[in-house]
Image 1 (cartoon, helix red, strand yellow):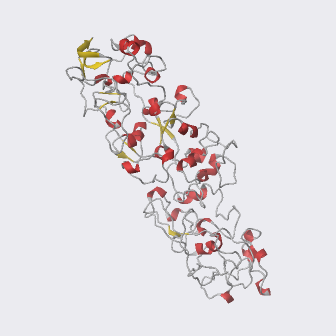
Image 2: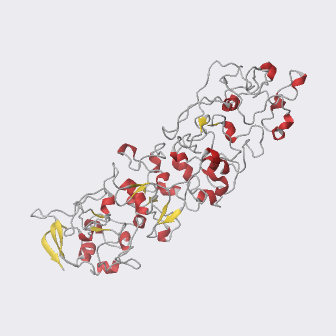
Image 3: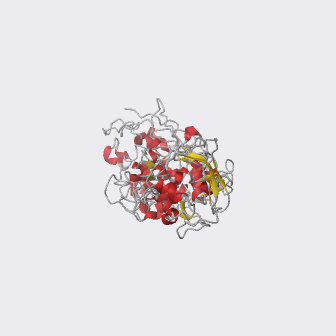
Length: 564
């Protein structure tokens, strides 16, 4: 069989030896997998020392090629396209020294069939592969200014001396592998390859202080192997980049991920078998962020606002795996760093500084938002507008509320307190409830990813569990004693009216409501509350703990029904 596809290759000044150099010049080659002398008998006595070299190098007497590569004239050239993360990263096909490596390592060439030998080594062929786009790209110009920004490449002059580009400044197989030296395993050019070799080129922000670079967690040997491409069974820190990535035969070739589904690369550890908490099980709950619905749609450089056709949620939309640090905003709420978001004014940010800025990215101004689960007099699906601190009323997420008299608040909450999105939207086994489950809105047994139960059906019997979400901040005894509103007990206990019938839990945008009609989060549920016989449908604020209703509910017509 003849070798194909190695035309026009010149010798590049890496590690491949010219033929007349004695084998002892490469003492670390002996007895490695590249010590191929055992496969061939010398054709001529004087060739006794070069048999290990003839697979890659042709003797001078048998080749006029400048580089002395052991090559045949090609009949065709196989193309190896790369499906890159963005259009900024060009596709290409191998050239230079990488073609010599692929002469054996693409699985299409029979080992031993070389032009300088008439006898075959008789070795078995590998599995034929015509597409190596599931591996790290080679023969690609190393240009930090041109390659996608998300790669965050180190400048050429700061690369370690072991990491070598070819004479044209391209990444080749020999950038990471020294074919004559297996000191570090897999013929790698340096030790601690799972981290050191990767970060020699890829300078990810805050990687040094990230959990994936420092965590001491180990696999408990339950469930699937979280590190399918490594022999090591050490800590997360020891695996480093290999926790998620593999340079060859990756499940997802765009980002060299171990597994094809993005979330599986996270959940292989975050299932309680490596990481302490089991996040994987959260996504099996009735309410969860649906990371399983999309594959291959997330782009590292995607727009902050997504079009309806591009709407998705993946783990990396809320977590940067290369930073993976917990941070606290100035209000004490925990979030993950180095991810984009939207600020209170609707402006895009490359790095959020508050928990709500992360949530506003999908639940704010972007197109294709989901409708709210409860129909309201003033319907609003833009959560950022609902929490605007210029609104007639709002739950205090971006700023303290504007109601100075809320007697039902449970300490340490007060009228000037700030709450976070995750105070209401989080796992039902969250540590905030004293549970052992993960924090954050991964999954919940309650609708709308709520941390506690919150009934919104008419005729709901009042109980501590029915309105557990509200009662976590507002004292039940105070509410039923009518300390905030003289008709609370009548509505909640006697008539079975849920809190949501009158109160919109986020807030009412100033673009729709007013302080006269929508103070105290009043925004009626139109499936429970209706216009009165005069077709009037409103609440009227008449001062501190005073107001009037113009509406119909629980089979009663209210026309200026006031309270004080």
